[in-house]
Amino acid sequence: MLLIHYYFSAIRAITKTKQRNGVQPFCKLQLACYFLMFLFRFNDSQSHAVKLVLLLTLFLSCKKEKLDLVFEEISTPTNFNLNNLFILNDSIAFVCGGQTGNGIILRSSDGGLSWQILNNQFEYNLHSIFFIDNQHGFCGGDSTHVYQTNDGGINWQLHFDWEGIPFQYNSPLHSAYFVNKDTGFFAGGKNFDRGIIYSTTDGGEHWNVAGFEHELRCITPTAAGILSGGYGTMLLSKQNFEFATLDCDRSFYTGFAFSNSSEGVACSYNGALYHTSDGGNTFSLTDKKNQTFGKREHFLCIDARKNKIITSGLSGFTAISIDGGENYDSGYSLNNSRINAIKFLNDTIAIATSDNGKIFRIHL
Image (cartoon, rainbow, N blue to C red; front, side):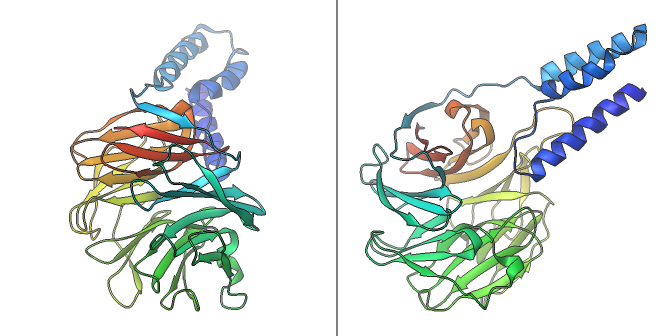
């Protein structure tokens, strides 16, 4: 029994350490290999039985089920990580990304079949992008830096409040939503720590800072107001852009998607999916979270269109529903790539971005 205690303690410690550092945890079978080096020091029959039970459990829990998904990987002119995307219409799409000290934006004008560099002269890695129309757009980068374009993305103006943002809130801006050319929001944060909602009501001339205890990953409009989510928290602004904390499951929310202003879904890094029918005032769990012992899936992004929902994340693990979230088919796909963002282009095509310049075009 002492051996089993040591084993599960080791799994929890190593997994938590890697997740804190933003790295995908070991498969339990990999952890077992390290642990068995310790177990083989014991030669009694009881320890041999423990070894066999642990190996069988680990083998079953590490089995990766493949999702039968039709897709193609699209060549791009960069090997930077592609962090986010925005679909303007069924032909035009934008992707942003980069690395420390360098950002890039790609544009497609043929529904994601080909991509060209629109601008790669940014001094900060870009994490979010939003276009109000084909000329006016914003993107959010590292350390609460915002860029704005008025010519379709050819030229970008940097906005940064050197005095108004406390140092602890200088963080990546992961998600963006703009009501119009004047009013918009960014949600950000890093390392599960301080979160920020950065907003403007005058087209970027001035910015308002709202700080929160934990990292925020997503922000979107609903029938109830402006909804934001992140590490163990959901926030909702119903009026005057003041955000109040909602009573919600303590999950790490990484994405929201609404098929209309009331019906929506949320995904979490913990592998859970949630549903709301009241614009985000309340959410109910629709797909079970990861368990301590068993499969470990992690969602990073989600989108919805009519009755279709698609969510994906680490190692290309993807879940799809064609009945509004009543049922999901899930498994590993997309060349086992980490999927950072996913959006519907139209009723039958979705676009996904990944690290190392990878973009996927998915047929649904």
